[in-house]
Length: 466
Ligand code: ARG
Image 1 (cartoon, rainbow, N blue to C red):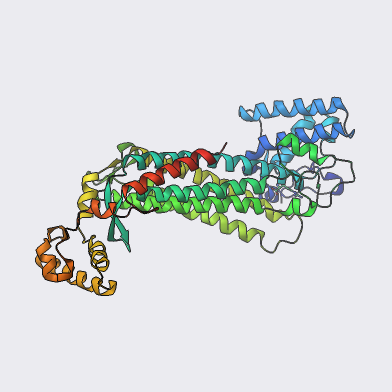
Image 2: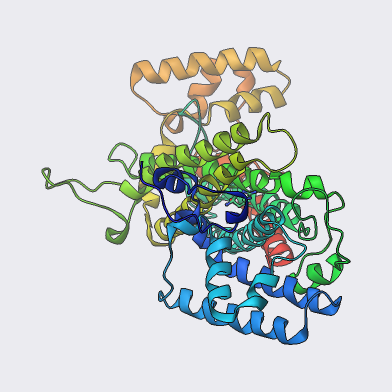
């Protein structure tokens, strides 16, 4: 077995080096490098606090801060040399800092453990991730609203069981997603709040005998509070689960919309056509226009849910406090955030650029006997028990089907013949009229949809993420 030089930070206690493969197996550096900016900010705040309470000289704190800032510049310029032997981002940065500034670098880890350090970095990252996703959710909510505003009067079939049910306004259909996304925004804001408390100062698990000032570190890093229990501080990953759960809900909603885009853009529906910039062709069938990107949004939902289950499973049964298992928290969280962030952009791109085929939507809405409920309602309004009315109209539909007629083809005389209680009142059975009759709050009639749009607009302006 190959052994490396035993120059680990815990070298004092060890005589032999770690196995080469074990080093790679244990390393999180390949993925937690992503936390470098948070790690540097966290270390600077920690060092500043150490100087404030007299645990570090002002010169040392200055050297640490400028050393860390120049490391940060190198990392962002891609000039930093990462070494997997450093195990993780925390050790990599600390090693290079110490190589450069000597003893001051060795003092940085006073009153701190990687356990509270990694929890702090991950929380800072989670807050930034939640903010970034919230901005994208808001942008998509805005686009959904804009498309809806143009289509209040666009009538399409509404479905249950994917069978034509009742005509609805396309705006109304789309706005359902506005409300889903608004709840997603609330969940994402809650995930942000869950991450917003400082672990640092908890050290390995029990706190530190040094007179640290945790409130000062919290303030420097922008945390609203300090976690009250050191053991909870280093072992809690609920905030990541909240984040991945919020991502999973967004992914589920986007997947439903993606599925509708796939259906709508098919030849069978033909309700929308995706822009060339958001479609793909086939390598063999020249006629094809495929909704690949909508399918991918639908498909990527699986890996986001996978991340949620993976993280839940990692955390179950872990004794307090820190366990190395918890290093497995990062990849699923990173992946869920990246994936959902991309899916939000993709769906917004498709929606903003698609062509809505209003004629096709209306033609479909005029078929399928979707005025049947209204006809039954009309009878019920003139005193016929609804169950009876249902049956009478059911027979009419059957008759229309047999004779190849649509509901709109029925004359007042046809109705009167079917049941004298129809009277001679003219009942408008066009899809737009049927939709317009649903004028109560939350309904699909144009006035109700306009009111809904106002409500949605006000909500978006009110709770848009800062
Ligand atoms: N890379 C580790 C992680 O991501 C950092 C914490 C390590 N702490 C420890 N005691 N080994 O969880």
